[in-house]
Structure formats: structure tokens, C-alpha cells
Image (cartoon, rainbow, N blue to C red; front, top):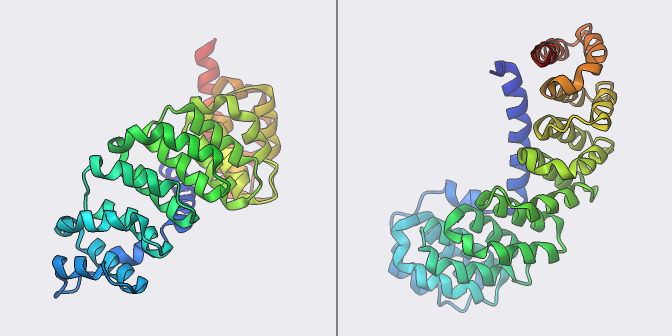
Length: 308
């Protein structure tokens, strides 16, 4: 069992990364869901407002229907009609409304597929998020989304598409390969998220270890942290990986050092030649580094003894 402090450290990193991802594609949605529906909101009245010639009135009506959730189910067909609304803000709101209204998957899939091909990147992004949220109900769209993700020119939109594919099909190799490509892009936000999710893919990400090793050299510390942590989850104990992690134990960033030491421990017997490096870290003035090193050394020694 992991000690509490290691769980908190890793959980803290992925919580931060998740917050970053959410900030990419749900701007405005959190505001919608925090608000309470107006007491006088009537589904029939709101549905009639969707026919307004004013885009702001239509978008406000969808927001209010979204706040009503499943109680606004009768307005589903009216919301779906606005997947082709001339105003991109209205189209952007449609996927989150369909999620909130708990729309039947048979009605959702053709609408989401259309929105995934929208000319507006925010619409595509939100449609991809909605698809992942519906989960297995939209499994029939995975092949289409794979194709769309490969052709997507906006890295943050492609990231959401790949994440949604993996949420529906955790063994999807095409999506894993796509994450590895995003890791190499160099954008700190996208790369840090992509490498973190690549780590979550564990053994499935083994062919893409070179991309993770490259991320260990990134100028941004958040990317290096994610890469150091991912290598411990993917668990490919090659000489290149061990050497790179040993080098990262000397990184200028404290958490990069901690994750590198932690990952060496998780690699077990493969990291036995790194015991000297870990032993040196036990003498660190930093308490987190010391505790991580002590635990990693115990892991390696235990694994090494068990292999003899």
C-alpha cells in the first residue's frame, strides 16, 4: 500500500492537471451548473425562447434549460434542433445541455457527430467532452472520433477527443499513440496533460516511452513532473529509462526529483543499479525527498531479494 503522503502528492498533481484540462473546454459550463434554476423557469416558455431571432436569447434559454437538468427533458428535441444554429455560442451550449437533460443515446449520437465536425473549435471541444461523459452510450462514435482526432488541428481539442476515446475504450491504441504525439508538441499545458494521461494508460503506453523520455527534457517543470511520474506507471525498466530517471533526481524542480525517485522504486529490480542514487537522496535536507527515497529503496531491495 502506498503511504498517505505519496498518495497525496500524486493525487495533487493529477488534480492540478485535471483542473487545467477542464479549463480548456468547459468555460461557462461550471457557471451554468453552479446556478440554481429560476423559480419561474418553465420548460415550455424556455423552449419557445429557443425560437427567438436573437442569439443571446437562444443561448440564455439553453443555459436555463441546462440548469433544469432532466426536468427539461421535454425540450430535448428543441435543443437538438440548435445543433445547426447559425450562432456558434448556441451550438457550443448544445452538448452540455444534452448531458444535463440526460438525453437518450439514440438521439445524442448523430447530433454529437455533427457537432464534432463543427467549424468552431469550442463546439468541437464541448462535443468531444459530452461524448466522453456519455461513455459507453456513444461507443458507436469511437471510430469516427478517431478519424476526426487525427485530422484535428487544434491540440487542446484533439486532447479532449483522445481523452474521451480512452474514457469509452481504455484499450484504444490509436488514442494512446495520439497522446504520445501531443506530448511531443511542446505546448506546456497540452504536453503536461497528455503525458499524465499517457501514464494512466500504463503498459499500453510502453511503445511510446521515447516520447515520455523526451518530455523529461522539457523546459516546463509541469511537463517534466508528469513524465517522471508516468515512467513509474508505464513500468518499462530499460537502461535508458533508469538513466533518465537518475538524471531527473538532480532536477532543479523538487517535485520532478520526487517523482523520479518514486518511479525508480516502482520499477523494482530493474532499478537496482540506481540504489546508489536513491541512497544519496536519503541524505537530502528535504523531508519529502528523504521519505520518497527511503520507500523507493525498500521497494527495490524487496523486489531484488524476491528475484534471487
